[in-house]
Image (cartoon, rainbow, N blue to C red):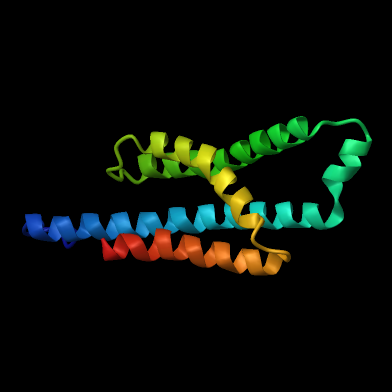
Length: 147
């Protein structure tokens, strides 16, 4: 018998522990990825408000609807980058996550709206950045461990 061969297979209980640990670790990694995307998004929204970029575009002839629609579409595309990487990682590491692409798709549609709403609570991007990071770490990092 070679040294790399296992004498006995893992028990079902131990396989369950391994699966749970993989799931928690994957959830934390996904939360960190989306935390960075959302942090970047909230900082850019608040900096835009401070520099009045939207006002400059309005003076140039753009409408408010065109500005916010284009901003929302770009943010959806920005959210799809970690979604594609996450789906590829799920496939590559053979993680059991059925229909995860549906969750990623709906999250990409909803999260920019949530970040827009949160951005109205703050005047500086640093305070909003801290809140977003803590919020995503608590929900995406600690909640899976608690569950």
